[in-house]
Amino acid sequence: MISGIVMVFAVIWVYQTALKERTKNLLFWVAGAGVVFLGVVGLFYFLDIATLESFRSSESTPGYEKDLLSVGDRKNEGGFEGFKGVFLSTFFELMPAIAGFMAVAALRVKFLLKAAFTPANLFSGLSEMFASISGSFKSTTVKEEE
View 1 (cartoon, rainbow, N blue to C red):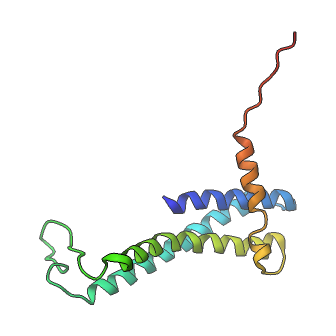
View 2 (view 1 turned 180 degrees about the vertical axis):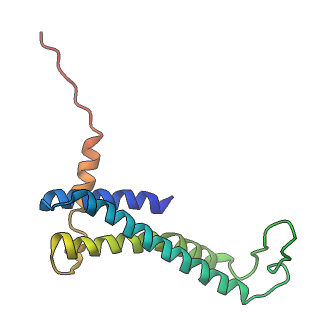
């Protein structure tokens, strides 16, 4: 869910940058940004799952390893309580979206802006994007002529 919302913002950001830079194949860049974002997010989800499974399988408690024919879910108890559990859950939830956004930002700077990799260039245009999004929700009233 979080990755989907971040992807929408990233694609709008690339669209506005491509319009501003007057690039050819505008939809190609927007679709490419979406594909890159989804690819990086998928890769990071795969890495997250592999990392969590390696942590949990090292415990090798009988409650975790279930028979293939048994009904029910694995017991994921032990090792992930308290601050460590909250930190790991938050990290593994947010990191794919952040990595996807950074990949789109890097492609935007390298190929659309053709600028150097600096923090200012990586995140340029975000405030304008949010301003235009918030401006799109404002309604205008039409005055009736008397």
